[in-house]
Length: 148
Image (cartoon, rainbow, N blue to C red; front, side, top):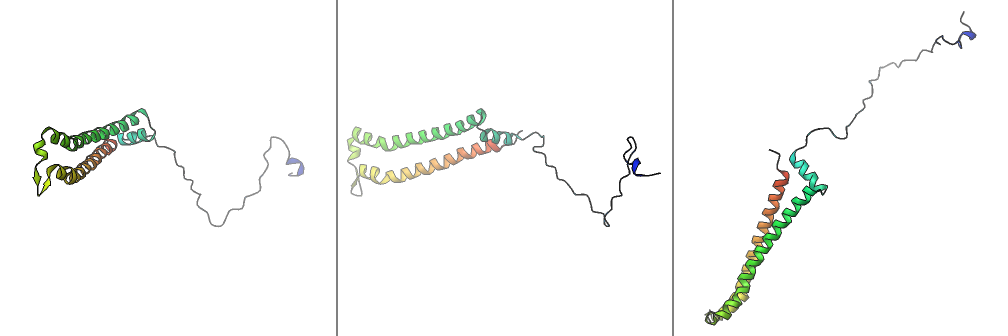
C-alpha cells in the first residue's frame, strides 16, 4: 500500500533515492591545518630579538648600552687625538728649543704636524673601526646568546 498519500505522513520516514556510487573510489581530500603559533617556550635569543624589534624598554636599554659604548670609545680616541696633536703646539711653546730642532733639513714642528700627523690619524681611525666593530660583535653575541 505505498501510494502517493503515504509520502507526506508525519512521523514516518520517507525513503531517499539511492545515490549513485563512483566506479573508482577517490581518496578523501586532505585538509592542511596550520596553527598560528605553537605554544612553546622561546629561547632567550628569540625573546631578546623580539624585545629589540618591538622597541620595548628592555630592547631600548640594550640599544642604549651599545650607543653608550660606542660614544665612550669615540670620546677616548678623540681625547687621544686631542692630546697627541693638540699637545704638540703646547710643547713647542713651552720648550722652544724643541721647535728649533731640524731633521733632514726640515724643522721638527713641520715634520710632526705636516707629515707624521697623517699616519697617526690613520692609525687612530683604524683602531676606532676595529674597536667599534668589536662593540657591535659583543652586542650581537649578547642578543643571540642562548639561555643557560
